[in-house]
Length: 146
Image (cartoon, rainbow, N blue to C red; front, side, top):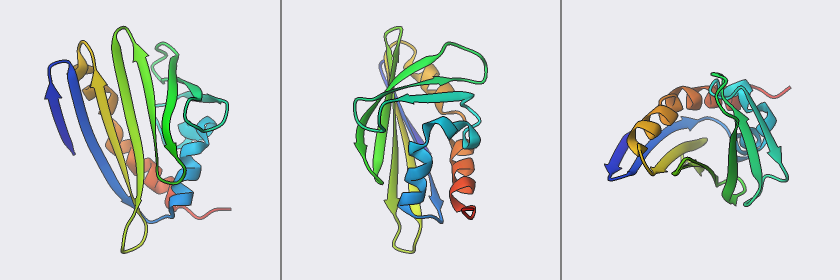
């Protein structure tokens, strides 16, 4: 895990190795309505349109805060996608990447970049659960399919 801070900009990286195929991890990523099954930081999520660059989704956090409106960007099937959420002069981008490992399985990498007032505080709050989220994603991806 690494974090970098610049005036009104902040970034952080978290990764985990998963014993699953890129297709399996991608399946979990693209099943937006079921994100709450493996991401405790999401109470509800709904995708409007295909899982493709330019599509929008909304997410409700468990704390009952505002409904977040986000946009998918740079969607590359089985490789990566970025979601972007903008509010009150702040832009939060989270890139979710899947990289095959030579030894089998994949490395799943999350990178958050925040721009705007309070970037470091917002970024730290948003990414505080990334290690736990990636552990849950790993468990979901590695469990046998029915």
